[in-house]
Image (cartoon, rainbow, N blue to C red; front, top):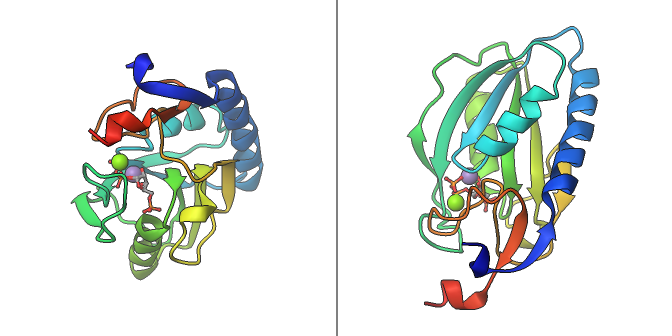
Length: 179
Ligand code: PRP
Ligand code: MN
Ligand code: MG
């Protein structure tokens, strides 16, 4: 698996350091409140797990699974709900946790959905942002790293469901996805 990686863009240490910083910022932001932290499966599961450990306010957590990419490096543009939330969001301070924002389609769909369910507030934290991919006008409230316009994997991000378990962000060798 490591052999399929051409270059490490962001190391495990850099990722963990940045998550600590984000945790401190979010802990200050939500002091006195108990946000409902929503993990967007599957990609965000590793970030979610590391992030909530460095947030010091009480949090509730829920999980939602959506998918728009399938086994492709391009978004299909159609967001599918694979698993919905278990708890109501009405009146809650919602913090959406994403691994990456690319086109912005997944997030704009989710934000619209949670707005219609009458969340009290909706904020977004994403570990990675790829602004070059944007097709809808949308920014996260909190961003870990801005990435170049390359297809990257690791730390939750997959190609055809593989590579999510790499602890760093790497660029795949082009021959892997041109096969
Ligand atoms: C990826 C990623 C984000 C989304 C970002 O999810 O985890 O959720 O795409 O892309 P966008 O801004 O263009 O919508 P994917 O649909 O691949 O599902 P996964 O999390 O299960 O891998
Ligand atoms: Mn995802
Ligand atoms: Mg994916």
